[in-house]
Length: 367
Ligand SMILES: [Fe+2]
Image 1 (cartoon, rainbow, N blue to C red):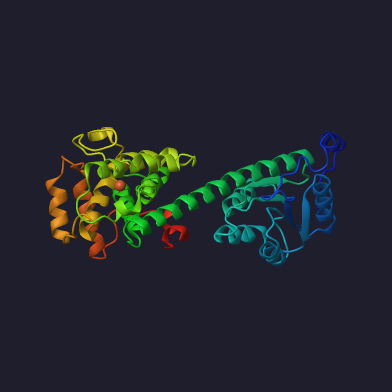
Image 2: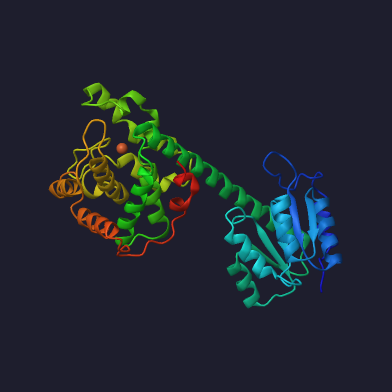
């Protein structure tokens, strides 16, 4: 099997770095641990030498089963993977890693003598992040590893931030009404309406996120106001009405919030321009915000709020219909009600809802 090309050129280039400076550091400042799954011992130790010279810690195993065990036991930050291994091959390892939430984003770079286009496509389909053909140039390998680590860090920070905001949404839910799963119910039904309107991918996820987090700004509203029974005073209302802007600000550090922050900000706008905070009207109001406004109002009516008693479904439905074109987008109300009806009768959505990660997360469901 062809080996790693330790070219003099690559060495000269890499020796220009201070020891360890070119390697990525794992969170917490420790050295990055790279697991090498490669059945050929010479190749394995060659890779280990190259990586250790660059400041990485390495762990080498000779087959897939040991590789999966090492991942559980040592939690490496990256895997270099040979495709043809005795027993479980590299494709299967990739698939298993991607199927597990804990390793779904673990960077995997395939290094193999199989260089056909089919193998490359199959490896990427199985979930590999990158593919290098043997003999690998050291400079290229190290550059690809740094690139995969950068991507991993970006995903992790996004996931952490998302979980934090989702936890905030749960905290608000508990602080506000003590209503279990309110936001998740809303996210699900808003997404069903979005899917009906042809939204897919990021657009649909944005609706789910926006619905989930629409009231996150209530974290900034005093609890006694949220729980106050009876009508609020003018001053109290003006404080309460700040929650969409507060929510938008809370989510701003999340880069992904570019897509859903407008939903948070505008979920209390009214179709006729009578809402807040900006008095937008009609289609000036982001579509996601128009959807969330309907689902939120319905949910508030049937479950009640400290300042208004709960109503029967029929009453809430009639109220949505009555307010079509005034408070709510007239075209969206029937779509929402139709999906609600289907849901009540246990009929699947008119348009199948794709898997939306944010609706599956434990952080969201865990109350
Ligand atoms: Fe709200």
